[in-house]
Each structure stands twice: as structure tokens, then as C-alpha cells.
Length: 196
Image (cartoon, rainbow, N blue to C red; front, side, top):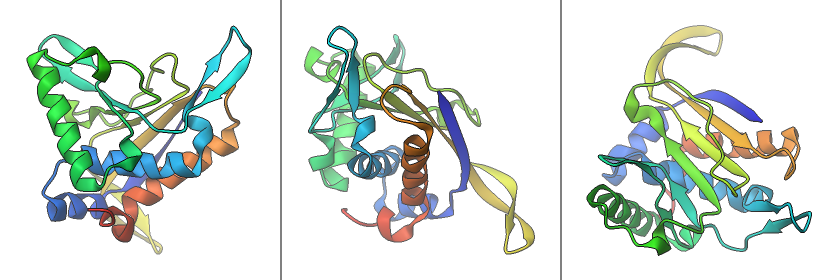
């Protein structure tokens, strides 16, 4: 199942400028905080044993486009990294992916995946689960759009965030709570600037 929501992106863009990084580390941090609050989405379904397997650590996969196609590098124990270390590791793994030199350790074992397809100039998409993971989040491009604030329509920077999840691991209310938590993380200047 896929759910989505649009949100303002002004705080996200300001945090990117303040941290001097790309958007990916900020998006990743928002996902990691949401997974801490909603650990149901950091799991997989073991169909053979008919049980959910919950993971104590988040091994964060992220989609990286290369000349050889799409790959999903994995940041091990991503929740244990501060913002600076997370940004460094994302950058390091992206560079290795583009050179085609990622080790198997960093191509397997992901527990949740982030896909930032905004760089392709698309507003939104339906993320496809990275089996056997139970959830994947996708982020579209940031664009100027009409946005209602306090009864007035203004032009604001807006981004679409979508979540695909395996309905066997949680219901729609839990998934919506997770998505709202991610969006709150992307719109809160305090949360975006924490942990650098």
C-alpha cells in the first residue's frame, strides 16, 4: 500500500544550506527518527515461519543512480551516526557505487530504504518495496506551488513524500503516523539542526 503527503520545504532547504550538505542526509535523519518512533516499519515478513522479524538496528538503504543502473547501498547502523558522520557515509557509499566498487557488505542487509527521486525532476512516485524490506519512502522534487497558510494562498517551496509499506506489518494508521513523523522532521528547524 502507498500513502503520500505534500509538505513545505523551506526549513529543509535552510537546513541544507546551514549544514553545507545535500538533502539526502537530512531526509535520512528524518527517516531514522521516524523509525525510532515506529519500529514496526524496520522489519521484514518471514513467510516461511509466518512471523515478523524486527531489527534492533537500522541498516539504511538508499537509492543511488549510476552509469550501470540503480543500486541500493546500505549504511550500517545508521541511527547510531551523527549528522556529519551520516552525511560522510552517504557520500562515501555514493562515490563507491558510481565507481562500481561497492562491497557486498554495503549492497545487502538493508532494513529500510530511502529513495530521493527529486533529482530526476519528478514530483512524486510510488516506491517499490526492496524485498524483503517492509517499507520504502520516496521524496520528489522541491517545486514552487500555491500553498494555503492562515487563510491566504502563497507561493511556497513544496515537496511530495510517499511511503509504500507491507500491510502485513502494520495498519494504515501506523503508516500514516510514520509518514507524519517524517514530515514533521522535515519541517521542524529545531529537529533538522539537531545532531550535527
